[in-house]
Length: 348
Length: 140
Image 1 (tube, rainbow over the protein chains, first blue to last red):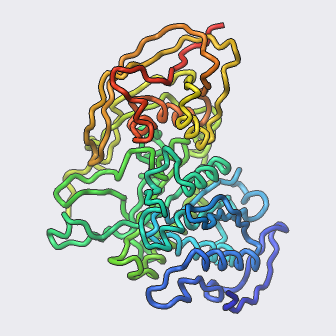
Image 2: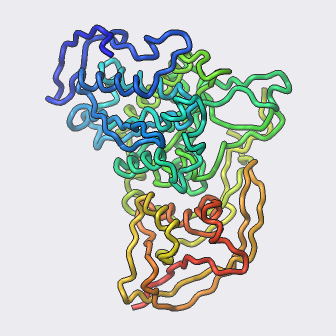
């Protein structure tokens, strides 16, 4: 798939990081090159990422498992320069994984573009303080079939307790090996549901972001996510023509709005119970899987970039990182095993 | 549009005290394999694992619906005693970063654990003892 011109000028930083002076447009992703309705196949994704790795040397790509139908699941690691930026202390480990649901492809498309942007130097600043890991596609079988579930009909984002599926098991094995302080799980939300359609409304909440919501997560950590991370990302994204809102679900306009779940069986909370600071993004899906995919992927990419930029800018702060690290070393307080959602005393 | 019915707070409805660990019958291979998939370390009894343990009796299991999702409401009674943990058990110690995960997975009343999953339904037979024991204290 050698179809792009690529004339790099190498810059060596700390003898390890190679950045390219070419713009991302000289290394277009399969989606950017594809025609109307095109979605990047698993095969094209691996080919593109392999070529990108070989050309830039900016990341490693490791097979971490295989799907039910045998498609390879890969983990990209962008170590950046040796050491960390001045005053940054130890680098923050950040893990992003995308497309657990096969019919939500924009996260994968954005992850491919994010890898390209970082590898080509268009977006390499965060690597000074962030040790970045990326799983661009968790559910390749579902993606090829344009379906939510994996090839066995399992919803991967409901399997994070039992870890029966090879795809989710691979994610957790990678998570346990990396033990990141920050995690982002990338999804898309459907824009139609009966209760909303009944009043003639399609959902459009822009990009939505949710924080950890299990009762065992520290309230202070949750507040950091809701009061610091999300507002700053919202501010940054407003200049990029992306509207970022809290991720809430409701069965209809007159029903209550709540967290999608407080359970541990999703990607956000199953990693959050390790005292990581975890999030999920829900981009706005199309009426079809392919509809408006380039704009959907652009918004996901901008959101991922804003996410990484936040943690780059705040990596040197004492809170919450020292707290997270101490909890990882010593363990958390006693657990809660059941919960309910309620109105807050003061609405946020 | 102003959202009136907004529930941004998560409130615990059941706390349990974290035990030192759990003793799991070796024949519960499904449970043990699930813990292994989570990378949770397990050890066999060392032959002299005397402990004060707590066992549960499953009093009732009631399907219910909360937060627009189906749950099992499980009622238990507990009793404590000293015992030598038999050799055909494996031990899981609640320490470090996985400690709350271990409790969440193994407590019978946990909304988020293994027991409510259909694959582990035999753990919650009403009128029976819950097979997994809580280790409260080691006895020298």
